[in-house]
Every structure is written in structure tokens, then in C-alpha cells.
Length: 441
Image 1: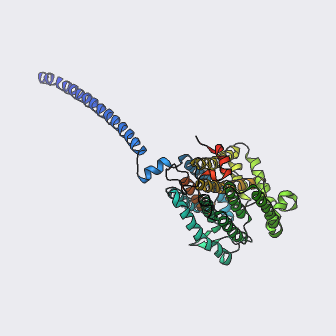
Image 2: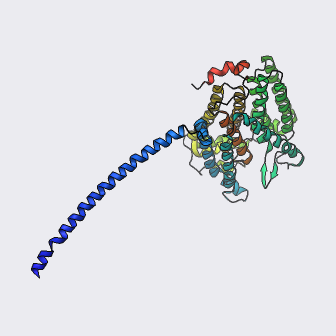
Image 3: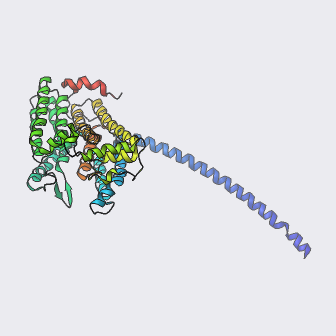
């Protein structure tokens, strides 16, 4: 038995050594195959990148011509808005007896379609954008009239209409539609001097302004006037006419002060805070003081407990209190980047229609941001207006999604960007004079 055992004992050792050798050979072959696969994958990725650059499909052309930096800035604002609405709205919902995340859910319901609209409209050809804007204007005009006839009166104004269980504000959609339509009329005038583009744009502005003032909505009328004013200035309106319109605008503010009691009260409280109830603005200013440089922390602020519209008209104050000066400055940088980037891309195109349309849309975007932040800091009379892509508000989100979709489409680097071949920036002296300041190369 010992002999047999001794003879059989070495066998497992030799077998195990063979197994180890085979395992080593197999592992080497596996490593070689994996390295070969990695090399092939790298080559494929490089090939895919090269194909993407030369891709002539609709998606490929869009990706390499759209302004991805500006699009990323909008998504950053949307993310900041979702965080701030989550921080500010539960306290508001609790006061109204609603579920804590009622406004957060509704904000998301409107934010997703707004971003989808932005991306979808950015695929449009330049010559089709004014058609989409004119259709939007034609669709919103009867709603604007219907608000005056059938809209409920809320806080002394009729601005809303109920559609499928949601309250929509038609005047929000008028702004981007008017900006693009007026730009087309003015650019057409440059292409054909016999076309009454200036008169048509002015008549359209006056009609819409009258309907908005009848609601009344003074803040919206100011934004609409700024859009029209910057566009006719760039279109080459004589300087004497510009001065006349400036005095006319000042007269309009004086008339609004005399006619609309809420405008008078807000201006009086701005000039002399002790003359009336200035509670909301004072609380807003205190929030920036409490927030300091880094803020009190998410959810730790107190202003949302006292302000009725902390998630909408005063969300910038919530940002200042809970996230501090750092975040508020970052928001300001994002707004400035979007406005200046859009203007620079449009001016660099050399097409009057694109310049006028994007400038009008950027005026809408920038004016809303400035009015909201200025009201929160008591730099201007208080005016309830949403902070673009940040404040809660369905109509505002959808309107801004449309506006930024138009901007992304108009600022794409495409060869067929000129709507009117003879419409060049040289036709408008103001455009020609300002062009060097907006060159991107």
C-alpha cells in the first residue's frame, strides 16, 4: 500500500502544474484579446466622432450648429430653479392647505414641456421661425381678448384663462411671438423700402399694448415696450423720432401713475417706504442680509414663511437667504451670459432679421430678470414678475421655452440663415455702428 501510495502521490502535483500553466496561457490570451478589444473600441469611438462631425442628418447638423454653451446655461438655470422651488414652495403650500410638494410637482410638469419646446423649436430653419411666431401670435390674440371678456379677476386684474384645468396667461406668449413677428416686418422693410414694415410693427405693438393695459398689466406692457423700442432703434429709426418716443414713454408712465391705483401705490412706496405697506420688500431685503456670503443652508430660511409668493415673485430673495451671495452672483452671471452670448451670435451672422429677432428676445429675457431682481432688492418699484426658468409659473416657463427655442434656432451656424438676401446690417446705421462690439471672432 505504501508503494502504491508513493507512486500515486506525485501525480496530483504534476497535474496541478499543468493546470497552472494552462491557466497562465489562457490569462495571457485573455489579456491580449481585451487589449485588442480596447484598441478596437478606441478606433471605433474616433471613427464615430469623425462621422458625427461630418454627419448630414438632421440631428447631426443640429448638434454641430446649435449653441451648446447657451443651451447648457439654460439647463443650469432650470436646475437651479427646481432646487429653489423645492426650497421655497413647501411653506407656501402649507399655508394654502396643499400637499408639501404641490408646487414642485406642477413646476416639473411645466418645466419638462418648456425644455422640450426649446429643443424642438431649435431645429427650425431660420425662414420658418417667423411663420411659427406669426401662428403663435394669431392663436394667442383671441385668448388675449377672451381674458378681458371671460377671465376671472384676481387681485384686481384679469390676466388668466382656464384651459384643461390649468391657468394660462396669454400675454406671456405674446412677448416672444411679437418679438419675432416685429423683427420680420422691420427686416422686410430693409429688403423692400416700399413695404410699410415700421408702420405695421408699430400698429401691432399699439394694439397689443392696449389689450394688455386693459387687463391691466403694467409690468408686461413695460417689457413689450422695451422689445419694440430696441427693435425700432436698431432698425434705423431717426434720432429725433427716438427722442420723441422716449418722451412719449415717460408720459405713459405718468399716465399710468394717474390712472392705475396699484401703480401709484407702488411708486409712492418706492419713493417713500414709510408712505404705505412695504412689508414684502422689507422682508426681501432682510433675507439678503441674513443670508450673507454662503447662506443659511437649503431649507433653513425664514422669508418663505412670511411672503405669499416666495416661490414665484420673490424666489431671488429665497436664493439670497438660503444660498447666499455666491449663488445669487452665479445666477446673475448665467443671465448675463445667455443675453450677451445670444446677441453676439446673432450680430455675428450679419442678417438683419436674426439680429432684430434675437435682440428682441434677449430684451424680453434680460428685462424679466432685471425687473425681478430689482424688485427684490428695492432698486425699482415692486413688480411681480417671474425670474426666467427659476420662478414657479407655468405660462412663464412655456413662454420662455418658446423664446429660447427661437434664439437657439436663430443663432445656429447655417449657410441658409438669411431670410431677405438684400437685408444686410448696412441698411440700419445703428446696427452697423454697434456691430464691432458683438463680434465673436
